[in-house]
Image (cartoon, rainbow, N blue to C red; front, top):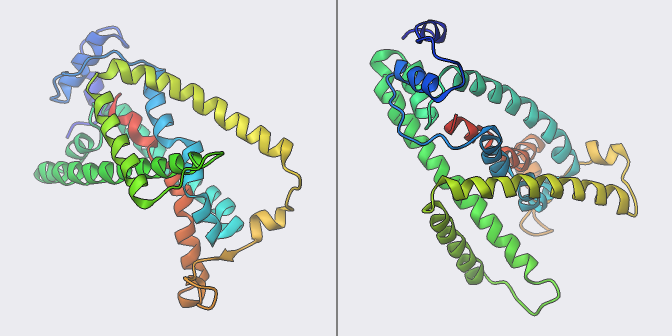
Length: 270
């Protein structure tokens, strides 16, 4: 496979950054442009920023984090997960900058794998990516349904049940399909709105917690307090006893990992 440098060197002398230049660059990868180019830098950023959704990512599994490791795992785990996530993101950024094709991973796999394994690598990557997208959509949408059910109980007589939550979940999935049928122009405006709401929301929550919290825990409680609330009943041992504290910490790190899910989605729309 030719190196990215040799591919770029072989490009015709079109002005960099124009559609014509991009189309010719894609042609050098054996890839014909089919999709419209009506998204800009902020729209591309917005797709990942919206899917990461710090506000909903934290709140969805906040209770889970408190019970699987407590403050120590939630705080230290966030730092550890951030470090490794950043390393993976840098690697993916390098790949997408050299192979800027829509679709992302399955095409990267085909380009980076040895020629005899190219088709199999692309096939496996594509299917695993599809399964991951299904799982992520399921998890995020069900988490949203749970949040809606909880918010609906505020100053009302609404009582959430499993059936009602599943009904909200199904309605949300249908709404996703309806929105996507209108094309990327509608999604572009939704992305812009999402960037604004998330930016304002995260800032407002951070300021409110710092300004209005009646007391503040010492650093030792935030970074050292370990709590295992995984026991089914108060009389049974938790996972830290049945397995090990390290096992509980790894499970608790799911909160941080879940919040970061989606940062690679900008690579699907270079």
